[in-house]
Image (cartoon, rainbow, N blue to C red; front, top):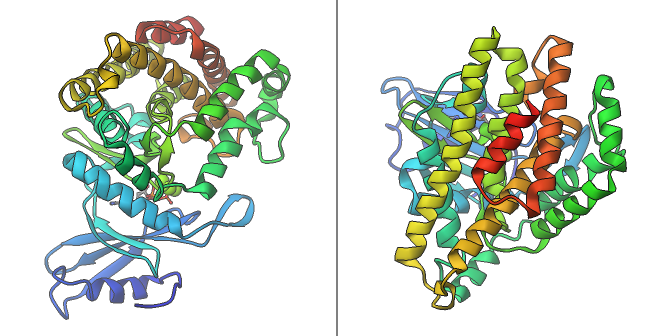
Length: 400
Ligand code: ADP
Ligand code: MG
Ligand code: MG
Ligand code: MG
């Protein structure tokens, strides 16, 4: 036991040394901090002789998200490790194994996934991942179904919900996704060349109405234990394997928020192909791959979710004829709205995505930004209307 302090690389080695049954006593260990240092420290510890390695992820007591330091609860390390353990119980092949959690140091010891790459980078490199849609569809179906009132006893669910209230990290989402982009907020980050489009967002009262609906759902709809930050930077991937990391934003929220995060980040990369495809033909081909993936993610999710419901549904009332179809239709509509909100914030809000921001040619970058905004706002407007995934695909095709 030791009082909280951020570890140095050397201290991370000492910490790793005393974890039981991991490394040979006295063996040479190396340590590198590989995180980006904004919210958390991530150390990779390797045993020289065997090549065996682990990851130590330690929360810092502040976030530099708004330019200056902002205190942020260390309890998010507990939330992350508990969420990872719940996910591992449901989809063991799709998350890193957690070896240990240390509450005093706000530290999780987990499997090293360095043989994978972060999916955002993989998409910028224009790789194709044929198993991804099945993997992430199954991840979301299992984690969302079995933590919801459809697949979990209602009293047990409420008790579990109490461990995942997560007010401070939820507030980040509430502000950065469901408020700031729709007004001239100081935290926004807007390139001059799209200032006119941002100003349109601020004066569009019909859009504000739809955003109010989505914000209300994020605040009050405790459908299932969400990952809460399921963008392509939280997914490690290689051709035969997908691993979801970083669930520190986990809380009980609306299921469509997780699905929307995945779709939004695929479509942001779609918009970014302005800058990454070398010619029109290759752009068309990669965009077709991305759109097919959007469709497949939803299709795999829906098929898995319905099968789980049919086989493992715990609530008699929810077996009422037609209710499953009604639920899935509403979930698709929520997904549409959250996809759009997730896209808009990445263009005008605080934290952007490399898929678009790293495009060097500013004219191409501007086209990508305008395309993402057009698709994002159309998705938000579709949140009470859309009836099939094909209609959502058609919105993307029409805008581009
Ligand atoms: P943050 O919450 O600060 O975003 P992440 O959990 O996303 O932290 O990790 C930040 C980076 O650290 C990842 O992008 C990845 O490069 C590295 N990393 C995190 N977890 C692992 C892991 N289990 N194996 C290998 N690298 C990891
Ligand atoms: Mg990070
Ligand atoms: Mg992360
Ligand atoms: Mg994180």
